[in-house]
Amino acid sequence: MKPIRWIGWTVMVALAGLALWARPAPSPAPQDWFRTGTGLGVSKVRLAVPNFGATNAAAQPLEKVFDKVLWDDLAYSGVIQMVSKSFYPLPSTWPTQPSQLQGQEKQWTQTPANAAMMALGNMAVSGSSLSVSGWLVDLTNTSAPPMLSKVYTGDATAEGARLLAHEMSNDIVSLLSGGVPGIALTHIVYSHQVGKNAELSVMDYDGANKHQITDLHTESIMARWSPDAGEIAFTCFVPYRGVVSAQLCLYSMAAKRVMYFPRFPGTNSAPAWSPSGRELAFSSSMRGDPEIWKVNSDGTHPVQLTFAPHSDNTSPVWNPKTGKQIVFVSDRGGLPGLYMMGEDGADLVKIDLPGMGYIVDPAWSPNGQLLAFSWRRPNGNYDLYIMDIATHQLLQLTRDAGRNERPWWAPDGRHLVFQSDRTGTWQIWTMMADGTGLRQLTHTGKNFSPNWSWK
Image (tube, rainbow, N blue to C red; front, top):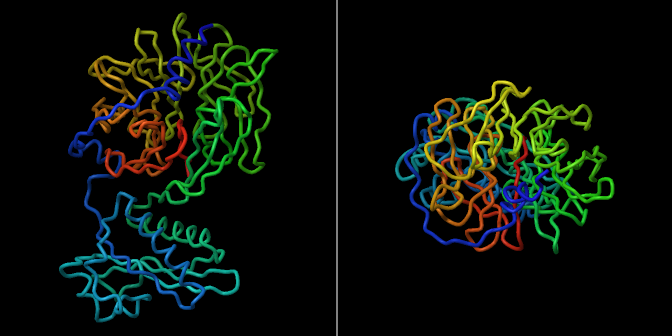
Protein backbone atom coordinates (compact mmCIF):
# COMPACT_ATOMS: atom_id res chain seq x y z
CA MET A 1 0.00 0.00 0.00
CA LYS A 2 1.16 3.52 -0.77
CA PRO A 3 -0.93 6.00 1.22
CA ILE A 4 1.87 8.58 1.27
CA ARG A 5 2.00 8.85 -2.52
CA TRP A 6 -1.80 8.94 -2.71
CA ILE A 7 -1.86 11.85 -0.28
CA GLY A 8 0.74 13.55 -2.46
CA TRP A 9 -1.58 14.06 -5.37
CA THR A 10 -4.99 14.21 -3.78
CA VAL A 11 -5.09 15.69 -0.28
CA MET A 12 -1.96 17.81 -0.73
CA VAL A 13 -3.11 19.06 -4.08
CA ALA A 14 -6.22 20.31 -2.31
CA LEU A 15 -4.56 21.74 0.77
CA ALA A 16 -1.14 23.04 -0.20
CA GLY A 17 0.36 25.63 -2.53
CA LEU A 18 1.95 29.05 -2.46
CA ALA A 19 0.20 31.93 -4.21
CA LEU A 20 1.68 32.72 -7.61
CA TRP A 21 0.60 36.03 -9.05
CA ALA A 22 0.19 36.53 -12.78
CA ARG A 23 -2.15 38.38 -15.06
CA PRO A 24 -4.46 35.96 -16.90
CA ALA A 25 -4.34 36.13 -20.67
CA PRO A 26 -7.54 36.81 -22.61
CA SER A 27 -9.70 33.76 -23.16
CA PRO A 28 -9.50 32.21 -26.62
CA ALA A 29 -12.32 32.88 -29.04
CA PRO A 30 -15.14 30.36 -28.67
CA GLN A 31 -14.82 27.32 -30.91
CA ASP A 32 -17.58 25.41 -32.67
CA TRP A 33 -17.15 22.26 -30.61
CA PHE A 34 -17.19 24.30 -27.43
CA ARG A 35 -20.34 26.23 -28.38
CA THR A 36 -22.04 22.97 -29.23
CA GLY A 37 -21.10 21.45 -25.89
CA THR A 38 -22.02 24.39 -23.68
CA GLY A 39 -24.41 26.70 -25.54
CA LEU A 40 -22.02 29.59 -24.83
CA GLY A 41 -20.74 31.94 -27.52
CA VAL A 42 -24.07 32.17 -29.34
CA SER A 43 -26.42 35.15 -29.67
CA LYS A 44 -28.01 36.21 -26.39
CA VAL A 45 -31.46 37.63 -25.87
CA ARG A 46 -31.40 41.32 -24.88
CA LEU A 47 -33.56 41.50 -21.78
CA ALA A 48 -34.84 44.53 -19.90
CA VAL A 49 -35.73 44.04 -16.24
CA PRO A 50 -37.23 47.18 -14.69
CA ASN A 51 -37.61 47.25 -10.92
CA PHE A 52 -40.61 45.31 -9.68
CA GLY A 53 -43.28 47.46 -8.06
CA ALA A 54 -44.05 47.20 -4.34
CA THR A 55 -47.80 47.54 -3.94
CA ASN A 56 -47.61 48.19 -0.21
CA ALA A 57 -45.07 49.61 2.22
CA ALA A 58 -44.22 46.25 3.79
CA ALA A 59 -43.04 44.98 0.41
CA GLN A 60 -40.66 47.87 -0.32
CA PRO A 61 -37.51 46.54 1.43
CA LEU A 62 -38.14 43.04 0.02
CA GLU A 63 -38.57 44.48 -3.48
CA LYS A 64 -34.99 45.79 -3.36
CA VAL A 65 -33.69 42.34 -2.38
CA PHE A 66 -35.76 40.65 -5.05
CA ASP A 67 -34.66 43.05 -7.80
CA LYS A 68 -30.96 42.61 -7.08
CA VAL A 69 -31.04 38.83 -6.86
CA LEU A 70 -33.16 38.47 -10.01
CA TRP A 71 -30.82 40.77 -11.95
CA ASP A 72 -27.69 38.99 -10.73
CA ASP A 73 -29.12 35.55 -11.53
CA LEU A 74 -30.10 36.51 -15.07
CA ALA A 75 -26.86 38.36 -15.76
CA TYR A 76 -24.82 35.30 -14.77
CA SER A 77 -26.94 32.81 -16.67
CA GLY A 78 -24.77 32.86 -19.80
CA VAL A 79 -27.76 33.02 -22.16
CA ILE A 80 -29.01 36.58 -21.57
CA GLN A 81 -27.64 40.04 -22.33
CA MET A 82 -29.00 42.39 -19.71
CA VAL A 83 -29.95 45.86 -20.96
CA SER A 84 -28.38 48.46 -18.67
CA LYS A 85 -30.94 50.44 -16.69
CA SER A 86 -29.16 53.60 -17.81
CA PHE A 87 -30.72 52.95 -21.26
CA TYR A 88 -34.26 52.64 -19.90
CA PRO A 89 -36.93 55.35 -20.23
CA LEU A 90 -37.71 57.48 -17.16
CA PRO A 91 -38.34 55.31 -14.06
CA SER A 92 -41.81 56.82 -13.66
CA THR A 93 -42.82 55.01 -16.85
CA TRP A 94 -41.47 51.58 -15.94
CA PRO A 95 -44.28 49.01 -16.19
CA THR A 96 -45.11 46.60 -13.39
CA GLN A 97 -47.68 44.61 -15.37
CA PRO A 98 -48.01 43.80 -19.10
CA SER A 99 -51.03 46.08 -19.74
CA GLN A 100 -48.87 49.11 -18.93
CA LEU A 101 -46.59 48.33 -21.89
CA GLN A 102 -49.23 49.24 -24.46
CA GLY A 103 -47.96 52.20 -26.47
CA GLN A 104 -44.54 52.11 -24.78
CA GLU A 105 -42.94 49.36 -26.88
CA LYS A 106 -40.73 51.64 -29.00
CA GLN A 107 -39.18 53.20 -25.89
CA TRP A 108 -37.80 49.75 -25.06
CA THR A 109 -37.13 48.20 -28.46
CA GLN A 110 -35.39 51.15 -30.12
CA THR A 111 -32.02 52.76 -29.39
CA PRO A 112 -30.55 53.01 -26.80
CA ALA A 113 -32.31 50.11 -25.04
CA ASN A 114 -32.77 47.82 -28.06
CA ALA A 115 -34.46 45.27 -25.81
CA ALA A 116 -36.13 42.21 -27.30
CA MET A 117 -37.87 40.98 -24.16
CA MET A 118 -38.82 42.22 -20.72
CA ALA A 119 -39.21 40.60 -17.31
CA LEU A 120 -41.50 42.65 -15.12
CA GLY A 121 -43.83 42.38 -12.18
CA ASN A 122 -44.98 43.56 -8.77
CA MET A 123 -45.18 42.26 -5.23
CA ALA A 124 -47.15 42.59 -2.05
CA VAL A 125 -46.88 41.47 1.56
CA SER A 126 -49.86 40.09 3.42
CA GLY A 127 -49.13 39.07 6.99
CA SER A 128 -46.11 36.77 6.86
CA SER A 129 -46.53 35.96 3.16
CA LEU A 130 -44.82 37.56 0.15
CA SER A 131 -46.54 37.33 -3.24
CA VAL A 132 -44.76 38.18 -6.50
CA SER A 133 -46.60 38.44 -9.82
CA GLY A 134 -44.08 38.02 -12.64
CA TRP A 135 -44.22 38.07 -16.43
CA LEU A 136 -41.86 37.58 -19.36
CA VAL A 137 -43.01 39.54 -22.40
CA ASP A 138 -41.90 39.60 -26.03
CA LEU A 139 -41.53 43.34 -26.70
CA THR A 140 -41.83 42.83 -30.45
CA ASN A 141 -45.31 41.36 -30.01
CA THR A 142 -46.89 42.63 -26.81
CA SER A 143 -50.35 41.61 -28.00
CA ALA A 144 -49.36 37.96 -27.71
CA PRO A 145 -49.76 36.16 -24.37
CA PRO A 146 -46.70 36.53 -22.11
CA MET A 147 -44.15 33.75 -22.36
CA LEU A 148 -44.29 33.56 -18.57
CA SER A 149 -47.13 34.54 -16.29
CA LYS A 150 -46.85 33.24 -12.77
CA VAL A 151 -47.48 34.13 -9.14
CA TYR A 152 -44.68 33.19 -6.76
CA THR A 153 -45.38 32.96 -3.02
CA GLY A 154 -43.08 32.59 -0.05
CA ASP A 155 -42.10 34.00 3.32
CA ALA A 156 -42.11 37.76 3.75
CA THR A 157 -38.42 37.81 4.64
CA ALA A 158 -35.24 38.76 2.84
CA GLU A 159 -34.47 35.06 2.37
CA GLY A 160 -38.00 34.50 1.09
CA ALA A 161 -37.51 37.28 -1.47
CA ARG A 162 -34.20 35.73 -2.52
CA LEU A 163 -35.82 32.35 -3.08
CA LEU A 164 -38.64 33.79 -5.17
CA ALA A 165 -36.14 35.70 -7.31
CA HIS A 166 -34.20 32.46 -7.82
CA GLU A 167 -37.41 30.66 -8.82
CA MET A 168 -38.39 33.29 -11.37
CA SER A 169 -34.89 33.56 -12.83
CA ASN A 170 -34.80 29.78 -13.27
CA ASP A 171 -38.11 29.92 -15.15
CA ILE A 172 -36.86 32.71 -17.42
CA VAL A 173 -33.54 31.00 -18.13
CA SER A 174 -35.29 27.74 -18.95
CA LEU A 175 -37.57 29.52 -21.44
CA LEU A 176 -34.72 31.39 -23.11
CA SER A 177 -32.24 28.52 -23.26
CA GLY A 178 -34.26 25.82 -24.95
CA GLY A 179 -35.43 24.18 -21.75
CA VAL A 180 -32.10 23.87 -19.90
CA PRO A 181 -32.97 24.58 -16.24
CA GLY A 182 -31.42 27.54 -14.47
CA ILE A 183 -29.00 27.00 -11.62
CA ALA A 184 -30.16 29.65 -9.16
CA LEU A 185 -31.53 27.08 -6.69
CA THR A 186 -28.50 24.78 -6.80
CA HIS A 187 -25.91 24.46 -4.04
CA ILE A 188 -22.18 23.99 -3.65
CA VAL A 189 -20.56 21.80 -1.01
CA TYR A 190 -16.93 22.43 -0.10
CA SER A 191 -14.31 21.84 2.57
CA HIS A 192 -13.08 24.59 4.85
CA GLN A 193 -10.30 24.51 7.39
CA VAL A 194 -11.29 24.44 11.06
CA GLY A 195 -8.14 24.46 13.18
CA LYS A 196 -6.04 21.54 11.97
CA ASN A 197 -9.04 19.78 10.46
CA ALA A 198 -11.42 20.30 7.55
CA GLU A 199 -15.20 20.23 7.74
CA LEU A 200 -17.87 20.34 5.04
CA SER A 201 -19.98 23.42 4.39
CA VAL A 202 -22.78 24.14 1.93
CA MET A 203 -23.70 27.44 0.26
CA ASP A 204 -26.08 28.69 -2.39
CA TYR A 205 -24.72 28.80 -5.93
CA ASP A 206 -23.98 32.53 -5.56
CA GLY A 207 -22.12 32.17 -2.25
CA ALA A 208 -25.00 33.12 0.04
CA ASN A 209 -26.17 31.17 3.10
CA LYS A 210 -22.88 29.47 3.95
CA HIS A 211 -23.27 26.95 6.76
CA GLN A 212 -21.17 24.10 8.16
CA ILE A 213 -22.77 20.67 7.99
CA THR A 214 -20.17 18.30 9.52
CA ASP A 215 -18.42 18.38 12.86
CA LEU A 216 -16.24 15.27 12.71
CA HIS A 217 -12.99 16.92 13.87
CA THR A 218 -11.12 15.23 11.05
CA GLU A 219 -10.31 15.78 7.38
CA SER A 220 -13.63 15.87 5.53
CA ILE A 221 -12.74 16.36 1.88
CA MET A 222 -13.54 15.49 -1.74
CA ALA A 223 -17.31 15.74 -1.29
CA ARG A 224 -19.71 14.77 -4.08
CA TRP A 225 -23.46 15.37 -4.28
CA SER A 226 -25.76 12.49 -5.10
CA PRO A 227 -27.84 12.99 -8.28
CA ASP A 228 -30.98 13.77 -6.25
CA ALA A 229 -29.01 16.20 -4.03
CA GLY A 230 -30.20 14.26 -0.99
CA GLU A 231 -26.82 12.88 0.10
CA ILE A 232 -23.17 13.85 0.01
CA ALA A 233 -20.43 11.24 -0.21
CA PHE A 234 -16.99 12.35 0.94
CA THR A 235 -13.61 11.22 2.20
CA CYS A 236 -13.16 11.25 5.98
CA PHE A 237 -10.31 10.08 8.20
CA VAL A 238 -11.72 7.80 10.88
CA PRO A 239 -10.60 4.73 12.86
CA TYR A 240 -10.81 1.32 11.20
CA ARG A 241 -9.62 -1.64 13.26
CA GLY A 242 -7.66 0.66 15.52
CA VAL A 243 -5.97 2.64 12.73
CA VAL A 244 -7.10 6.02 11.42
CA SER A 245 -7.36 5.90 7.64
CA ALA A 246 -9.19 7.51 4.75
CA GLN A 247 -12.70 6.08 4.47
CA LEU A 248 -15.93 6.85 2.65
CA CYS A 249 -18.53 8.80 4.60
CA LEU A 250 -22.11 9.72 3.73
CA TYR A 251 -24.02 12.80 4.85
CA SER A 252 -27.83 12.91 4.61
CA MET A 253 -29.33 16.34 3.84
CA ALA A 254 -32.72 15.20 5.14
CA ALA A 255 -31.42 13.76 8.42
CA LYS A 256 -28.76 16.50 8.69
CA ARG A 257 -26.15 14.07 9.95
CA VAL A 258 -23.46 11.63 8.84
CA MET A 259 -24.99 8.22 8.20
CA TYR A 260 -23.44 4.79 8.67
CA PHE A 261 -21.34 3.56 5.75
CA PRO A 262 -19.21 0.39 5.75
CA ARG A 263 -15.45 0.67 6.28
CA PHE A 264 -12.87 -1.05 4.08
CA PRO A 265 -9.22 -1.98 4.68
CA GLY A 266 -6.53 0.40 3.46
CA THR A 267 -7.06 3.88 2.05
CA ASN A 268 -10.46 4.64 0.53
CA SER A 269 -11.15 7.99 -1.05
CA ALA A 270 -12.56 10.14 -3.87
CA PRO A 271 -16.14 8.78 -4.06
CA ALA A 272 -18.14 9.53 -7.22
CA TRP A 273 -21.82 8.82 -7.79
CA SER A 274 -23.21 7.01 -10.80
CA PRO A 275 -25.95 9.03 -12.53
CA SER A 276 -28.52 6.53 -11.29
CA GLY A 277 -27.45 7.18 -7.70
CA ARG A 278 -27.28 3.45 -7.07
CA GLU A 279 -23.48 3.07 -7.13
CA LEU A 280 -20.30 4.83 -6.05
CA ALA A 281 -16.92 4.58 -7.72
CA PHE A 282 -13.90 5.29 -5.53
CA SER A 283 -10.18 4.72 -5.07
CA SER A 284 -9.16 1.96 -2.64
CA SER A 285 -5.99 0.20 -1.55
CA MET A 286 -7.90 -2.59 0.19
CA ARG A 287 -5.94 -5.15 -1.87
CA GLY A 288 -2.62 -3.34 -2.11
CA ASP A 289 -2.06 -0.48 -4.54
CA PRO A 290 -4.79 2.15 -4.95
CA GLU A 291 -7.21 0.92 -7.63
CA ILE A 292 -10.64 2.04 -8.84
CA TRP A 293 -13.54 0.16 -7.28
CA LYS A 294 -17.30 0.53 -7.32
CA VAL A 295 -19.79 -0.29 -4.62
CA ASN A 296 -23.54 -0.09 -4.12
CA SER A 297 -24.70 3.18 -2.59
CA ASP A 298 -25.33 1.35 0.71
CA GLY A 299 -21.71 0.13 0.76
CA THR A 300 -22.42 -3.45 -0.26
CA HIS A 301 -20.92 -5.54 -3.05
CA PRO A 302 -17.53 -3.86 -3.69
CA VAL A 303 -16.10 -4.68 -7.14
CA GLN A 304 -12.55 -3.96 -8.32
CA LEU A 305 -12.46 -2.28 -11.74
CA THR A 306 -8.76 -1.59 -12.41
CA PHE A 307 -5.75 -3.88 -12.05
CA ALA A 308 -2.52 -1.89 -12.39
CA PRO A 309 0.14 -3.05 -9.91
CA HIS A 310 2.66 -0.50 -8.67
CA SER A 311 0.55 2.50 -9.67
CA ASP A 312 -1.95 4.88 -8.12
CA ASN A 313 -5.46 5.11 -9.54
CA THR A 314 -7.83 7.75 -8.19
CA SER A 315 -10.39 10.50 -8.93
CA PRO A 316 -13.00 8.45 -10.84
CA VAL A 317 -15.93 10.23 -12.46
CA TRP A 318 -18.89 8.68 -14.28
CA ASN A 319 -20.26 9.86 -17.59
CA PRO A 320 -23.35 11.64 -16.20
CA LYS A 321 -25.24 11.33 -19.48
CA THR A 322 -24.92 7.59 -20.10
CA GLY A 323 -23.50 6.10 -16.91
CA LYS A 324 -21.56 3.70 -19.13
CA GLN A 325 -18.01 5.09 -18.86
CA ILE A 326 -15.70 6.16 -16.05
CA VAL A 327 -12.75 8.52 -16.43
CA PHE A 328 -10.04 8.40 -13.76
CA VAL A 329 -6.47 9.46 -13.04
CA SER A 330 -3.58 6.98 -13.03
CA ASP A 331 0.21 7.21 -12.97
CA ARG A 332 0.64 3.76 -14.55
CA GLY A 333 2.37 5.44 -17.50
CA GLY A 334 4.67 7.58 -15.37
CA LEU A 335 3.03 10.96 -14.73
CA PRO A 336 -0.62 11.14 -13.65
CA GLY A 337 -2.81 11.05 -16.74
CA LEU A 338 -6.40 10.47 -17.79
CA TYR A 339 -7.83 7.04 -18.59
CA MET A 340 -11.31 5.95 -19.60
CA MET A 341 -13.00 2.58 -19.17
CA GLY A 342 -16.44 1.04 -19.20
CA GLU A 343 -18.44 0.96 -15.99
CA ASP A 344 -17.35 -2.65 -15.57
CA GLY A 345 -13.65 -1.87 -16.10
CA ALA A 346 -13.54 -3.11 -19.71
CA ASP A 347 -12.34 -1.22 -22.80
CA LEU A 348 -9.63 0.69 -20.97
CA VAL A 349 -7.97 3.46 -23.01
CA LYS A 350 -5.55 6.28 -22.24
CA ILE A 351 -6.73 9.76 -23.15
CA ASP A 352 -3.75 11.27 -24.94
CA LEU A 353 -3.10 14.98 -24.68
CA PRO A 354 -0.68 17.17 -26.66
CA GLY A 355 2.08 17.55 -24.11
CA MET A 356 3.45 16.34 -20.81
CA GLY A 357 2.58 17.26 -17.25
CA TYR A 358 0.48 16.29 -14.23
CA ILE A 359 -3.23 15.89 -14.93
CA VAL A 360 -5.67 15.70 -12.02
CA ASP A 361 -9.29 16.37 -11.03
CA PRO A 362 -11.37 15.26 -14.06
CA ALA A 363 -14.99 16.42 -14.18
CA TRP A 364 -17.45 15.31 -16.85
CA SER A 365 -19.96 17.82 -18.26
CA PRO A 366 -23.66 17.02 -17.77
CA ASN A 367 -24.17 16.30 -21.48
CA GLY A 368 -21.26 13.83 -21.56
CA GLN A 369 -19.43 15.74 -24.31
CA LEU A 370 -16.75 17.65 -22.41
CA LEU A 371 -14.18 16.93 -19.73
CA ALA A 372 -12.75 19.59 -17.43
CA PHE A 373 -9.52 18.95 -15.54
CA SER A 374 -6.49 20.58 -13.94
CA TRP A 375 -3.19 20.24 -15.79
CA ARG A 376 0.25 21.31 -14.67
CA ARG A 377 2.31 21.50 -17.82
CA PRO A 378 6.14 21.64 -17.80
CA ASN A 379 7.39 24.96 -16.40
CA GLY A 380 3.80 25.96 -15.70
CA ASN A 381 1.20 26.03 -12.98
CA TYR A 382 -1.96 24.03 -12.35
CA ASP A 383 -4.48 25.50 -14.79
CA LEU A 384 -7.94 24.45 -15.89
CA TYR A 385 -8.71 23.00 -19.30
CA ILE A 386 -11.75 21.68 -21.13
CA MET A 387 -11.46 18.86 -23.63
CA ASP A 388 -13.92 17.50 -26.17
CA ILE A 389 -14.18 13.78 -25.40
CA ALA A 390 -14.64 12.74 -29.02
CA THR A 391 -11.97 14.87 -30.72
CA HIS A 392 -9.61 15.68 -27.80
CA GLN A 393 -9.69 19.37 -28.77
CA LEU A 394 -8.65 21.61 -25.88
CA LEU A 395 -9.60 24.99 -24.46
CA GLN A 396 -7.45 26.54 -21.71
CA LEU A 397 -9.51 28.46 -19.16
CA THR A 398 -6.98 29.85 -16.67
CA ARG A 399 -3.43 31.00 -17.25
CA ASP A 400 -1.12 31.00 -14.24
CA ALA A 401 -3.32 33.15 -11.99
CA GLY A 402 -2.32 31.08 -8.97
CA ARG A 403 -3.08 27.36 -8.76
CA ASN A 404 -6.47 26.40 -10.16
CA GLU A 405 -7.79 22.96 -9.31
CA ARG A 406 -10.84 20.80 -8.53
CA PRO A 407 -13.15 21.98 -11.34
CA TRP A 408 -16.75 20.80 -11.31
CA TRP A 409 -19.65 21.51 -13.63
CA ALA A 410 -22.92 23.22 -12.80
CA PRO A 411 -25.92 21.20 -13.98
CA ASP A 412 -26.54 23.66 -16.84
CA GLY A 413 -23.17 22.81 -18.41
CA ARG A 414 -22.41 26.53 -18.74
CA HIS A 415 -20.64 27.18 -15.43
CA LEU A 416 -17.76 25.70 -13.42
CA VAL A 417 -16.79 25.88 -9.77
CA PHE A 418 -13.17 25.43 -8.74
CA GLN A 419 -10.59 26.22 -6.09
CA SER A 420 -7.82 28.77 -6.59
CA ASP A 421 -5.15 30.38 -4.45
CA ARG A 422 -4.79 33.41 -6.73
CA THR A 423 -5.61 35.72 -3.79
CA GLY A 424 -3.04 34.09 -1.49
CA THR A 425 -5.22 31.41 0.13
CA TRP A 426 -7.43 28.62 -1.20
CA GLN A 427 -10.87 30.01 -2.01
CA ILE A 428 -13.89 28.88 -4.01
CA TRP A 429 -14.59 30.53 -7.36
CA THR A 430 -17.08 30.09 -10.17
CA MET A 431 -16.85 31.12 -13.81
CA MET A 432 -18.49 30.60 -17.15
CA ALA A 433 -17.23 27.47 -18.88
CA ASP A 434 -15.26 29.62 -21.33
CA GLY A 435 -13.20 31.15 -18.51
CA THR A 436 -15.07 34.47 -18.32
CA GLY A 437 -17.29 35.83 -15.56
CA LEU A 438 -15.07 35.00 -12.58
CA ARG A 439 -16.82 35.17 -9.21
CA GLN A 440 -15.17 34.65 -5.84
CA LEU A 441 -17.61 32.94 -3.46
CA THR A 442 -15.51 32.58 -0.30
CA HIS A 443 -13.10 35.14 1.10
CA THR A 444 -11.91 34.19 4.58
CA GLY A 445 -10.05 31.17 5.91
CA LYS A 446 -9.08 28.27 3.65
CA ASN A 447 -11.78 26.79 1.43
CA PHE A 448 -11.27 24.07 -1.15
CA SER A 449 -12.57 20.93 -2.91
CA PRO A 450 -15.95 22.30 -4.16
CA ASN A 451 -18.69 20.26 -5.78
CA TRP A 452 -21.81 21.60 -7.51
CA SER A 453 -25.13 19.86 -6.91
CA TRP A 454 -26.74 18.03 -9.84
CA LYS A 455 -29.91 20.10 -9.42
